[in-house]
Image (cartoon, rainbow, N blue to C red):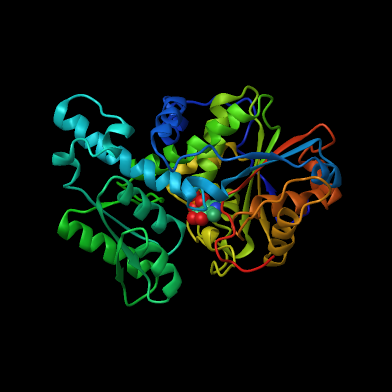
Length: 385
Ligand SMILES: Cc1ncc(COP(=O)(O)O)c(C=O)c1O
């Protein structure tokens, strides 16, 4: 393969079993039950899996389905699942420890066990979708929440976080300064940090966040009986990719082929694949795809994303708007989907491959392929397309 934007994963084998190492990252047990439990939440609604036959024909594949996360929890992005489920898991774990028996989503939503759960305050550093998601989760269960924002986060983003009831702490510095300050203050005050990325000694909560994301994959399994042959999934730190790849790997035999898509300047997975271990991105992560602007992978996800992604690829900034337009102004009879710059990155990756004959062939795509992409966010005030 001669492309500098597409690389095969030398570690991936289609017949590799989903083992214990993978199950530690993404545990498929109990996810159907979790999805059923969520019905207790008034804001919960299964998101649509749209079929786009006209675009599939144009791209030369058999079927194209788009999981549309623009209405998740009335929030606009899949990230809501992570924030809400991670907060729920912390609170239900605390109840379980105190009473030696379990509680339910519904019980906690209705204010059960407040004597235990009210003691928890949540915190995270993020100016993007994850910050809003944690704020939304804390609000749902009636807990205090602090979001640490870098100096340059816009006032609109701050307002969106405050609107979800969180208290905002502005930090005089960049994102890393906000993370450091969040960790310092949380330690001092006994707050629980809900991070979507892992670090040494901090894996349980990022795993819990990914458990939340797997709910959307369980929905896909229920919505699409035959399932995909190819899955294009965009990555920031790799939490979404781990949930999608891990859950489909566990559920389907043979598993689909997985392609992880990143912005050129935030190619931490692409570089880690080449190095054979977690490695920094080659660029400065300056991209319009804000949710994917990550320079480092979440290390806990390696046994799933690092071992079962068949190809890693990057897309250019110029490929984002055409992909958003393809979704917003669809071909004959296809449904219109509102998608933001990070949301449409999987589709942008598919388009890049389908317009390059060698790449199309390399991935084994043809008129019988069934392709899944995830539109991971709606058009969150990103302007007209
Ligand atoms: C809309 C959107 N898509 C995809 C991602 C990537 O998720 P992850 O960082 O888990 O790889 C993010 C992360 O914030 C996001 O906001």
